[in-house]
Image 1 (cartoon, rainbow, N blue to C red):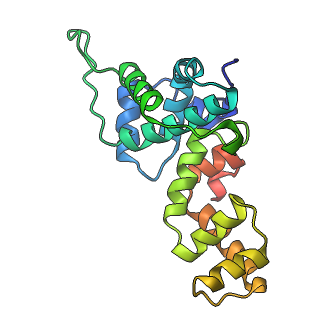
Image 2 (image 1 turned 90 degrees about the vertical axis):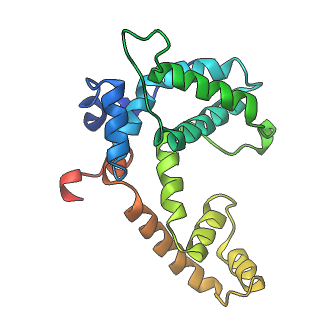
Length: 209
């Protein structure tokens, strides 16, 4: 099983931060919650180690990719409270690498993976940092819009089926209105993504954003 290459590592925004230490990147990540590039750099720096650990524990490549993504999602939410004690004088120091290895081991042991045929995640289509920030943006959408977007994107339901489900739940939304709600949901979702994440993954020009 080959370690995947992530093209975001070649983006100028990401490359410009490679010289920062783990301490500096963590501090920048914690102080700038509206920026996504710092987490992306940490991901690019340590994804080979995390993937190497995971690929030996998963039964299939599909499960390995999904567990890899779930592990980085867990890391993303835990990073906010992390305090490193990296010191040359302290043999017990908590380094970023040691912490990430511990987090990966925790996820390998604790996350119960569905069977391969039930996994619809594609590592080639959605890199873990993008997944984390899209999920965060989804959480900020109004409940009905979020539900419509999820039904369309995750379950690939038709507008008619979405409308029927919503009507059964007491929402008076006609099929022809679902398309408008979807467009509004996509617009809001994109708007709530960090500007630098849109630049790294969608090629948007930051100067014009």
